[in-house]
Image (cartoon, rainbow, N blue to C red; front, side, top):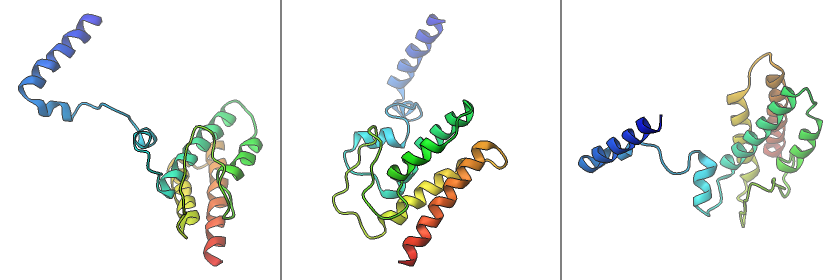
Length: 149
């Protein structure tokens, strides 16, 4: 197996010397939005940050459902990671984010990104889908309250 892999790498190197454009189709570097942002120290836009938090919550909810646990502790952490009222957000330690002056619609944009990511992965009728639907409703209620104030 190693010889085929080495041969393919050699063949790609030879082709790449003749036609460097071949390297444009080979994926390299960080894969994923959060990995790309790690290379750039600028803060993520609020909707992207909401999507990153939603991905972490989806993973935690999936694990809880997979192992037969409730999502009560996840919902307790969710109020820190994704508050329902405009206040300082307490992100998990693996997500570093600092925005000096949030713009007025920051909270709404954050929840839109959060709800959007949840809606993409929500499945009807499954325990995971039901849990994600509750979280989507929570975010939409927070957006409605923020818009009415």
